[in-house]
Amino acid sequence: MSRSQACRGPASFGRERGSATIWTIALMISVWAAAMVVVQVGVARVARHRAQSAADLSALGAARVALAVPDEACHRAEAITVANGAVLRSCSLSGGVAEIVVTMRFVVPLLGSATATASASAGPVGAPA
Image (cartoon, rainbow, N blue to C red):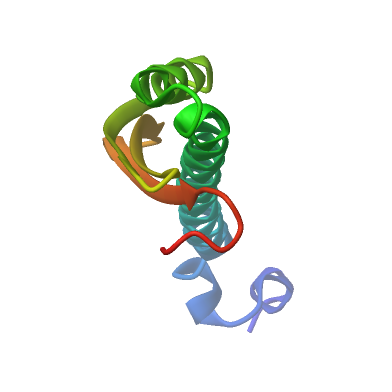
């Protein structure tokens, strides 16, 4: 064995040359995929919380005027819902209790648009649910 062959190492070294690049690329793809899953779940959770906030606020606004001016309650709920970036799907009043259902459209990266739905009720203490 000549001195130059001994410095190169085993014969298999030439076949593995560049494998670290492949492993690095594979690792970066898996990290990127995991990050995208986390982002998508986060976007969906934020949208769900925003829809629930819009429903809660709309139910409170409708219940505030439900006994005094029942015809105005659902209009108030719709105005609050729109101000929060959602769409009022249903509004019903029963004994001063407002039942609200809202939806909110949002965009999930790489998957497209989706809809979050939330419902809430509000009314006087002791009112039948």
